[in-house]
Image (cartoon, rainbow, N blue to C red):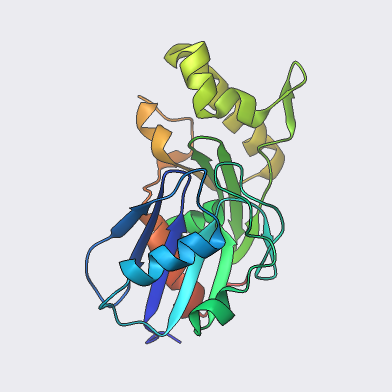
Length: 224
């Protein structure tokens, strides 16, 4: 498994990014509300021209169980549930939630809680190499609103930097008390808006999504 040639695909609300573990730079194409699975597949075939890979790992912005997309994405066009990526590409495909893929790439052993601060809120845990996606974003947090309502990008714009930061710290404290991680990794594009981090937390990096994608096929310790 360790010598597999893997193409990792990170599907986002504004861009789809790819990278191969055989080398080369990140390649990307615009996504957005008109992109469904078929249009993305067509774009990928253009993007990966000239790359050498045997298998594909995909990070999808929504719930995935047993390699199947369970719900349509919020920021892309419908047409993802039931789409057969392996048949379309003619190669083996492993697909997981995008936050979990970045979490796997950020993992340093033990019990880790990952929170991705972006347009919404992504979450995952790894416990002794067992990977667990978590749909925490839509759980109630305050005043009948969800964690995503307070920690997502719209909250940063609406409430301002100071209040948003306070809610990030409060949410991390609450989730740490409930889930008892050894450490927390805060990733996503908006981690850069945090001047300081909560206790036991470190910054993630969106590039770790590719490391996580490679690990789906090459890390023999990983349990999905």
